[in-house]
Length: 286
Image (tube, rainbow, N blue to C red; front, side, top):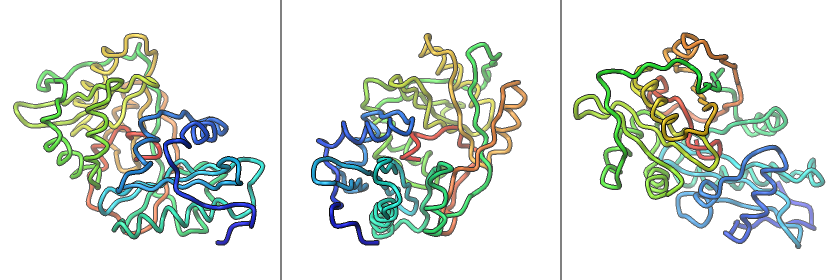
């Protein structure tokens, strides 16, 4: 779709970070710098802005994980909506992802954004389970599972564990998180075998990505996350539709589980193990 004459599309630069952050905050989203930098000026991702000649008025990004791509950061300034801007941004982002070899593209849709994505061939993949787990929740560690801090030398094995379950190669994101002083990556092991991992992020306080081979491992990882964040009252998890064991575990903990049908996709499913996924890295990154 062509843009109005007073607007132009270009690739975002790191100089655009403050405005991109403001656009995200205008719709009630946080703007963590590490996640925004992960899609700007790197070969595996593309972030574009629509510029009115003075400043960006819209943004969108895509990140390629091999066969699986994610669209995110889709925001159009309120004063410029209904001008075809969202379609132009989405076309640019999905075109990049398809060119990078992503046969499957996923995103998290707001109620306002859903019609746009449906016009571009995206459909709901089902109802996810989201929850906030209060610190006061009774959690029991699994006696067969040990948790340790991850090190840079763990990147290869951690990326392979994640790829088999997530469905795409998030090595580049895991490398960023392993090197981020505001994050702690922990690995759960049974014997010498990886059974899960979690990234505990401090700015803002959250946990994700988080994967676990079964709910007992997930519970053990949550205990570690709360221990690392003593001032945190609650942690949020987002389970994909196919993680039925995880949803049953959450209900067994007695926490409120909210249904959410905002995850959308187009293209054939990739090999993955959704029943092991408990938390995303970040909404725009999957």
